[in-house]
Every structure is written in structure tokens, then in C-alpha cells.
Image (cartoon, rainbow, N blue to C red; front, side, top):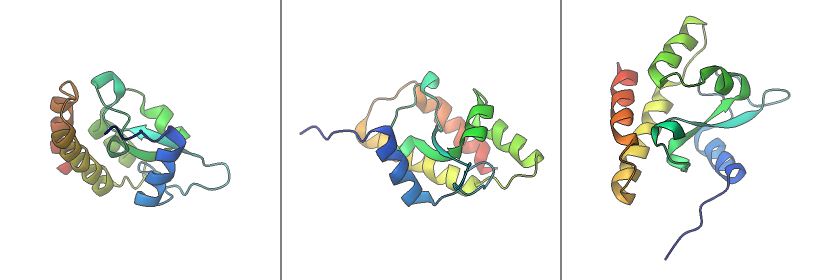
Length: 123
């Protein structure tokens, strides 16, 4: 039986319930002008799926400024800026994605990139 995939706004609501109302990169709370966006940890360009397990909440500023930077490089840059990157949340989400890929299969393009980023963030 096929289970329907939640749309982007539904996934964002689930992410905020799972992780709380703060940007994973800069720690700002999502209120007022600070709006939440879905941030793909493994970019779609690298084969990352639009699954809940591949997404965290980031503010528009951080999501836009990250561009195509790797997770480790962007986390380092955010910390240089004095922002409290939630590395534990990133690693936990990457571990959940790894488990979900093992369960569902596929995502061959994403696997090497995912493994490298998990190692880099755990340092």
C-alpha cells in the first residue's frame, strides 16, 4: 500500500514539532519576521529526497546563504559568525535519514555524501 507523502507545509509543521521553533544554524526563534523554511540536509542536487528525515527548519536567511555549501563547511561558517549551530540536531537527523534510506532503499547518489557529512559534523 502506498502512503501519501506530506506536502512541504505539512512537513515543516512536523519538523517544528520534532525539533522546536528555532533555526538549526543561527538559533533564532521563528516569530515575527523570522520565518521558517525547510532545509534539505542532503541537497536534492546530491540525490537527497524530500523526506521529513532529510529536512530541518532553517530561517530564510540561513537557508539562502548556505547555497550549495556542505553541512560541515556551513556549520563552521555559522560558528565563525558566532551563531549557535545545533550540531546534535543535524547529526540526529542525518542518522534518522540513514536509517530511513536503509528501510526504504534507493537514494544511491545520496549515500556517500550523507556518510561524509555525518563524519564531518561529528568531529
